[in-house]
Structure formats: C-alpha cells, structure tokens
Length: 259
Ligand SMILES: Nc1ncnc2c1ncn2[C@@H]1O[C@H](COP(=O)(O)OP(=O)(O)OP(=O)(O)O)[C@@H](O)[C@H]1O
Image 1 (cartoon, helix red, strand yellow):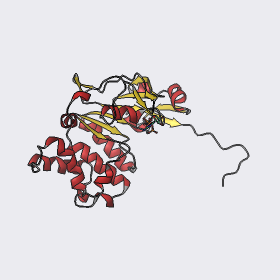
Image 2 (tube, helix red, strand yellow; image 1 turned 60 degrees about the vertical axis):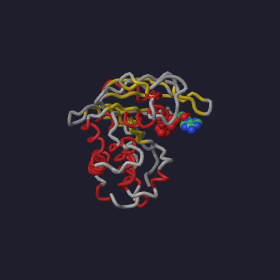
Image 3 (cartoon, rainbow, N blue to C red; image 1 turned 180 degrees about the horizontal axis):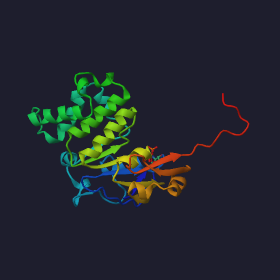
Image 4 (cartoon, rainbow, N blue to C red; image 1 turned 180 degrees about the vertical axis):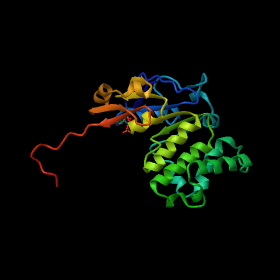
C-alpha cells in the first residue's frame, strides 16, 4: 500500500498481514508513517495505491456501515471528540453501536449489553452518566476504547491505545487486548510493551516496512540502533515472557557534577 499526503509519499509499498485472532504491532520512529498506514486501513484516508483486504473482501469498496461492522478504530488525532464533548460517557460508547442499528431504531438489548460490557472491560462503568468533557485524558482514552469495543467489529485498529494511560491501565489494557484474541492491529511506541503482548511486529521506517516477525526476531540491538537510533541491550524477561530491552543512557560527562 502507498499513502501520499500533501504530495509526499508517507507510506510506500507496505504490505502486511494481521492474522486472525492475533495482536499485531506496528512500531517505528515519529513520522515513520504508522498513523497514516492505520488511517488507510480504517478508511480515514484513501491509499494512493493498494487495498485493504479482509478475508479477501476489499474494505474500500464496502458501504460505510458494513465497513464499520468489519473494522473498529481508535484514531490518534480525535477530531470527532468535539461532538463527543456534548455527550455522556454512555452516549459516546453507544456511538459504536450505530453501524449495527437501523435508521431511527431504538437501542436494542444487544446494544445496551455491548455498551455495558465495553464500559466494564475498560473499567469506565463508574463514569457512564458523566459528561465525556469532564473526564481526564486517560479516562477519555478508555471511553474511546470502549466505543471501539462496543462496535464489535471483526478487526480492531488502534493508534497508540495506551496514550495517556497510567502504568496500571496500560498493563490492564494490553493484557485485555492480548486475551481478547481479536484480530488487532495496533501502533505502539513502548517497545517493551509491544514485545510483551504482540504476536508479531512490523517496523516502519520512512514509510517503508523494514522488518517483520516475532518480537524476539525483530527487536535486536542492530535494528534498534539502525531504525530508532538508540543503543540497547536485549535480555530475556525474568518471567520468561519474551525479550526485554534495556536502553542505554549515556553517562554524565566526566567532571560534570549532578545538581
Ligand atoms: N495531514 C498531513 N499532511 C501532510 N503530511 C502529513 C499529514 N499527516 C502526517 N503527515 C506526515 O506524514 C508522515 C507520517 O506521519 P504519521 O503521523 O503517519 O507518522 P507516525 O509514525 O504515526 O508518527 P508518530 O509516531 O509521531 O505518531 C510525517 O512525515 C508527517 O509529517
């Protein structure tokens, strides 16, 4: 797939597969094209070349409601939240059910159950009747995740799902995503988190996929140096759960005193 923005190629020839029931991670430095690639997958922009196939079906050719039953997204820049600001948390999450509803039909029992379930999964049930606008950044992020869960689509596309979340909620969310065994494609900045939960990783650099494989295959010191420009040692996690990256921080300059 190719994505062009303002006349510039920001994703070039990227081809990746998100296997069913697996958590697939997309990593890469700032500006490498992760969000652009994901936006093309969830139809917020049209690829300059290439297609998104879901079980062989061209997502770009589907009517919007059908596409929304197939792919639910948590976008990174959330222009649509301005309208969400007028709504309660439950109403924001209920927006995820719109693709399942007939025009002007009342909420069904299945809709209500999906909304309640998604609020419970994200630990936001307590805020159901609060105005969305009155939440913290992390709480809003969890509500927008709940909306994506409530959509009950076949595929989840998440752009930085742990943005704004404190460490407990990061760990809980990533554990939940792994356990849900839904087909998920997520851009992640935290490489250790990606290593801990993703089945496979794809690495973008300057809009091109430069490596793909299991976290152990991909997260090697040479790749971290070349793609991310950092020096690191990769060890095994003490709990046996895969690779753990220890980033090197240059020591203080000799003779310089710490404040
Ligand atoms: N609306 C836009 N118009 C023009 N260029 C854009 C636009 N959005 C993004 N870009 C450019 O496209 C490139 C890829 O951006 P993108 O947001 O996809 O990267 P990213 O890997 O998600 O970055 P980050 O880790 O910083 O979120 C960048 O060079 C960016 O400046």
